[in-house]
Image 1: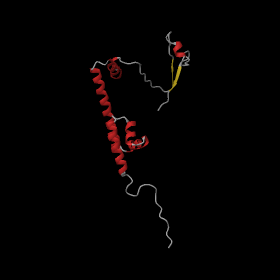
Image 2: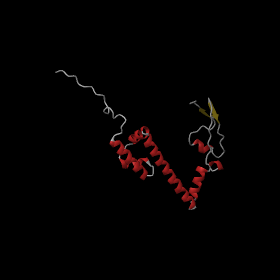
Image 3: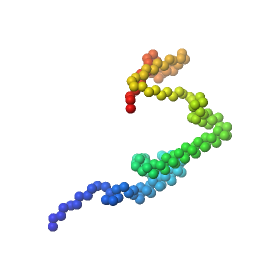
Image 4: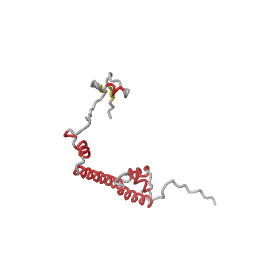
Length: 156
């Protein structure tokens, strides 16, 4: 009797290709519970759940429902922190008040730096005019303050 060996393809048995395993479902549930307890902070949640970051990234990128729940947990964490910040402001914490204004009051002039967005198709030359008291400070960073800064812009 001459029988040929049956050739099998690597991977899951037929009919189970898109079915998540029980372990994967259990891991996802554990991670979601842990992430909720850790206020949306991923590192400690992964450590407690015993799940690697690459496994999390696979779950997050391949499962839209899982991604949605993760995003909701993260939004909830931001809401929690914002409410704590408001509590600090109500308690007359000046630092919290200034922080809030720098983040949310930009349109009213509460900013440390100017944001500049420029669209161009080639290169832009910028010349920084140095106030008299700054040259020594700038030169400590090995900047050539006599030459314009040239920025190449690539179209996407």
